[in-house]
Length: 516
Image 1: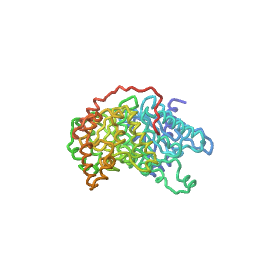
Image 2: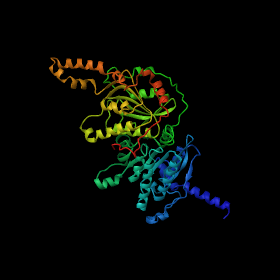
Image 3: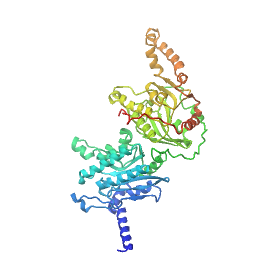
Image 4: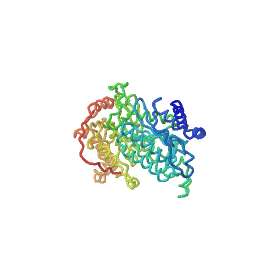
């Protein structure tokens, strides 16, 4: 056969591989309002940058009629490309091929690009649209899923791992996105569940839809599995590109620094008016966050889950930072079980990938009550403490108002190796609020008073004047400085400059035992 004929055969096979499950299945995919695997990769990556791996691989199964259902490339498209000029690796499940199910060879492809990503030191992005393990292959497909899960675990903390769920993600394979750093979902087309509605109906006689069981509302608001939710696939993939702009290629690198376009010495008069005079009134902490960040640009993570705590990414003088903050506008910013887990995982991610942490504190305490105690607030709250204490990236804290009790300690306090701890003049740092403290300290005096309520209010006023301020903590060195709120942005930027390139001494050990 001549070279011309061989090239013609190659071109034919390439065309066949690009066709996936064929025209009819592609039309069916589009009819559901979904893109194909290759269309998703084209939107995700810089134009023309995709280099495919294993386009001609096929499964080896002959049982259950699969011998007649062989497609070049099987049910996943894999390779490398660039996002904003930086190398990334990607694999996208192809639902047009046997429902995107994971076979022995499709898992082999996914594992190959994951191994290359670790070797190169570059992010891995998985696009999920699959019915799970391929039943017809039996244990071979389960072995493939296990191989992916192992690599997810071994990659953790080495390279950023991002999962984009744009269809079903079911069965044991759903644990792969769960292990990765960030999970994106799209309204109306994304579902994640261990067991589907049909099996649930058969086993426990409960009727439930795919969307109710594992849609975006379930995982963005209730379970916390999803970190980002988009209206459509195009917006979702744009958000993935945006997120990667804050992240380093691997743990060996720093996050990319952008040329700043916002004055590092910029002040903001509005910050003087955000904290209400009545300390029991709420305000929106996001106003403070967007005020101090470059150009007000803040990419919030898990916006709909545990909104009493805010986490996300922004920049200060072009440098990426991770933000952790209470939200007084929701549950007074109290720390409950979900907030603890949300905050702890984000802190650990930032620490793993050299992203400095900036914490804004207005916290009345940990959530009290039997439901929280039974649910393990002690165990889950300990995760948050452990994460902050363990983190060695630069940690800067700004106390805007309340910082009470154990919640004061956890929020990157000096006691947990906070590097620079600042406070506004409105800060209140104490074991508890004035009323609770007076009820305990002056119980006998109040009981003996003729007008108990009047006596109590007098004592509360005295306590507030004496203790509800940042200066006692500052006198002990627990607060490095009390600052004019208008200067928050320049103070943060200078602190970051001071803390760049820290020299870190670690104790020799295999690893700590975080209270999971």
